[in-house]
Image (cartoon, rainbow, N blue to C red; front, side):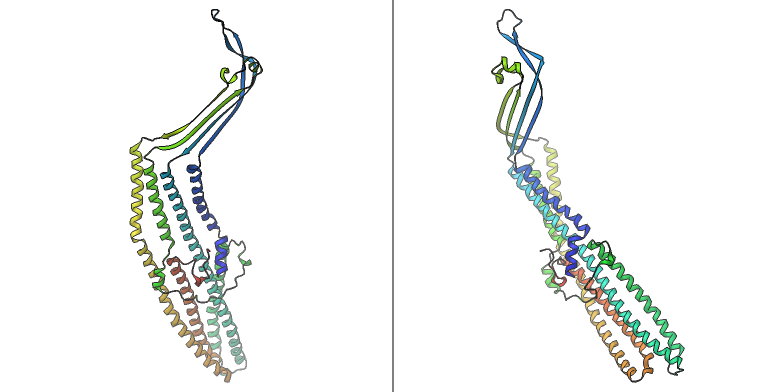
Length: 433
């Protein structure tokens, strides 16, 4: 059983899909670190053509200096780069954001545990259904073999004109065999359907290729008392609620922090250079006199302040309402889960009493059949007298194993309601360590 649960947790297709939510929550924490903790660093680089220029006499003859004129016939390459660096300084918003992000990770873990618990419960229900059907099939096939022996004995007596057997006895036996064969067909159908469900949960394409070792139904070990289960209540919904409260509270702090300005340290650097032969020949100090070449930079402290206060105050109020709403749910969540646990325990306990009664009835039917079988060994003509008690024994055996099946499923309901389905030693756990 434990191997089946572990394989389900590893290969169930829906769990593989659900685990992506957890991966996204973890990635969101890393993304927030990169966005807020690490500085913003942007580099822009460009290349293009640049015209040359000539120094020509000033057209104003009253002046003796020269002027620049572009020479479009002398094209050369130009290079430009722009670098911007900004380091955020909003520590309060960062801390609140990290608290919210980490709470979202815990929320995703709790939700994944809920899905894991549901999937494992379904798989174990399939397994118990398969075990019950197999147990029933074995019981009915054994009964069919015994009835074959009795039918052969009656037929032989009829053929020998034995007064201890009649056609009526034979017909009654064959009528009873119809019900037996019908139940046997239903048991085989139950095996196939349960095997199909197990194959999907385990990611097996061919259900007939599976080999199930523990194929016969057996009662699970007794669960701890209800007081112990209530005291150790660890339902994933409680963890999900706790993580949700932390996330909502942190979002309130994030919204409040957004009311103030965004502070940051910034730095800028810009450089442009062009290469043209005529420019380099006629102009030695290109960084000063060249109209295209330039270098500049600055560093300082800056801020961005969003002045739409009414909208931001509305977001703060909305976040506070969502947090308060979730806090009210916290007041009754545990009591509600305890109530569900106690209800599941009552059903489990009632089935335990029914199991004891079914066991007593089965033992009595076995004792009755055994006493008649002793008479049959002494007097073979008593074979027909075994049919009624044997049918009674089969009926009580079926009731007993049906009770075991129902109680095993009720045990899963109790473990799921207590949040211990993936941790309980009753099922061979814990499974997530």
